[in-house]
Amino acid sequence: MTLPDTMQALVQLHDGYSGTQEGPSIDTLELYLEAREVPVPQPQADQVVIKVDLAAVNPSDLHFIKGEYGQPRIKDAPAGFEGVGTVVAGDSPLVGQRVSFFATQSGTWAEYAMTKSQGLIPCRPDLRAEDAAGQIVNPLTAMAMFDIVRESGAKSFVLNAAGSQLGKLLIGLGRDNGIAPIAVVRRAEQADLLRELGASEVLVTSDDDMMAKAEPVLKSLKPRILLDAVGDQTTADLFFAMPNRARWVNYGKLSTTPPKLTQMGQLIFQHKVIEGFWLTRWMQETDPAKLGSVIEEVQERFVSGKWKTDVAAIVPLSEAMEKLPAATKIPDGKVFIKP
Ligand SMILES: NC(=O)c1ccc[n+]([C@@H]2O[C@H](COP(=O)([O-])OP(=O)(O)OC[C@H]3O[C@@H](n4cnc5c(N)ncnc54)[C@H](OP(=O)(O)O)[C@@H]3O)[C@@H](O)[C@H]2O)c1
Image (tube, rainbow, N blue to C red; front, top):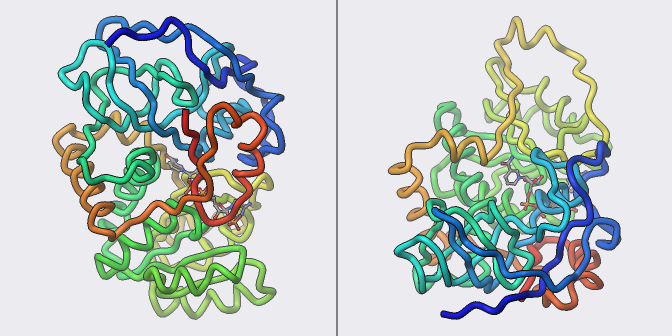
């Protein structure tokens, strides 16, 4: 296939880190990105170019363009980490095939993206585009963190931001594996849906007596793992109310107000642990054979209907500068960019 010389892309206006901690909400893209015609990336050894069908918009992308993520921005490079598309050039037997991928060399918020040949995930033909476009960041994180839950041996676990796409995937895993999810949300109207999905308890942080409601639940279900995307005071209070040997696994920083850790003695005398989880590190450390079987299970879960990607909006690439900020504020679903 002959590739065009240029393409449309949302390119970054800044290098490096911003030093701010404002969280992943955006009111305008103009501070961070510009829609531009740029050269189509040229693959070197071990790289492929992918024609993007659909790109995901994750909180990590928004943290990243704002300069608040775990890796530096690159000025003039297209943004967007995750997507699905067809391999059109480069060093790979998968040229011509539909793959999910994480763009390490040139981002997915563009007509063409570039990444390393090794990380490509061939997609089953029956996998929906929206599931394929978001197949890596949230599903693999859910599978990896659910292993931590399983290994804890407890019959329940706590998760916050439970109405997020990742939260709903975790609830599905708890339901299907007989480990009761204790879901924490900030909006009461999410409770019924999360119970239908399989949450055994739903705690609402905006309730005045939320901790009074949480304490008997934690006492009777005895969860050991707290999967935390928020990192606020309520999270800390829940952790200190959990039983001995509880592990607080922080994997997101949705709150911009950090907690006060009021009972540090619990780390010493109750053997409690606070730690972080980052998918990037998990993928580097995980045996490729295990990764292959996890990916197979992820695709099977989507195709069989055990998991579903809720879609808030699909925004055309040509309109993304104007429409993406409002789309990211639609609750209870993921936003995608369509080149
Ligand atoms: N560490 C890793 O490797 C890794 C990998 C994947 C994802 N993540 C993280 O996982 C989290 C969820 O990702 P996602 O794509 O599933 O998100 P999502 O579908 O976009 O949903 C975001 C959720 O966060 C909730 N939220 C936002 N700000 C909040 C706050 N201050 N307090 C409480 N809840 C808040 C929202 O609640 P409302 O509906 O009430 O607004 C919404 O349910 C993000 O933090 C993301 O960065 C981390």
